[in-house]
Amino acid sequence: MSWSELAAVAGQFALLSLLSIGGVNAILADSQRILVLQRGWLDEAGFAQAVALGQAAPGPNIMVVGVLGWMAAGPAGLLACLGGVLLPSTLLVWRYARWAEANRQHPLLQAFQRGCAPLVLGLSLSGAWVLVQPYTQAGWPAWALVAGVALGSARSKLPPLAWLGLGAAGGVFGLW
Picture 1 (cartoon, rainbow, N blue to C red):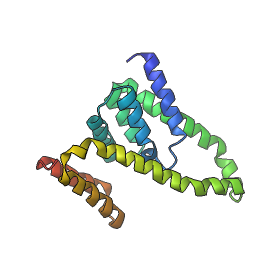
Picture 2 (picture 1 turned 45 degrees about the vertical axis):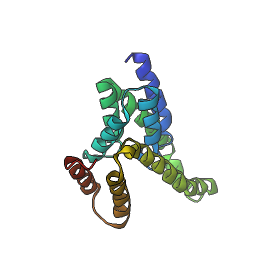
Picture 3 (picture 1 turned 30 degrees about the horizontal axis):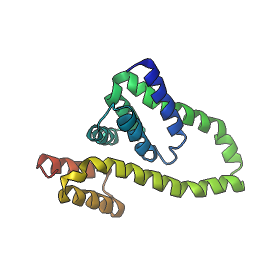
Picture 4 (picture 1 turned 135 degrees about the horizontal axis):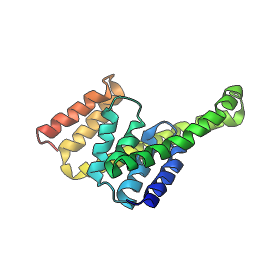
């Protein structure tokens, strides 16, 4: 990887940072497009594994982007992806947090906040769809797991690590 490629990826992740409303899950689909489809730095299974590892690691969810960068291009990839995602959104929040606090009742701010919920949901669902793609050929056990985790996590209070353990156990026993 050349420095110009890393700079281009950092720029792409900087743009994604402005879409990461609701967290890193909102930009997973575009992260996959950049790292798998455009650059070929990861394959689909490697991307899904990096996301799972990043989600299982202790700390904030943004760790997923660091793990993706590391697995794609080592330390330089980590800096490009994580730095690209953190810098613009951090500067934006730092600059406008006081204004938003002082203008909580402003109609445009309230409209923006109401509009964010469907945006976050749609972006998160597109990320989930990208993550399930490598396992579409695994047959009904993998689809049963996807449906079970989706329903179970929506209706129970089990931590995400428990669901990750269930998937890992299925892999150990050769279900997918």
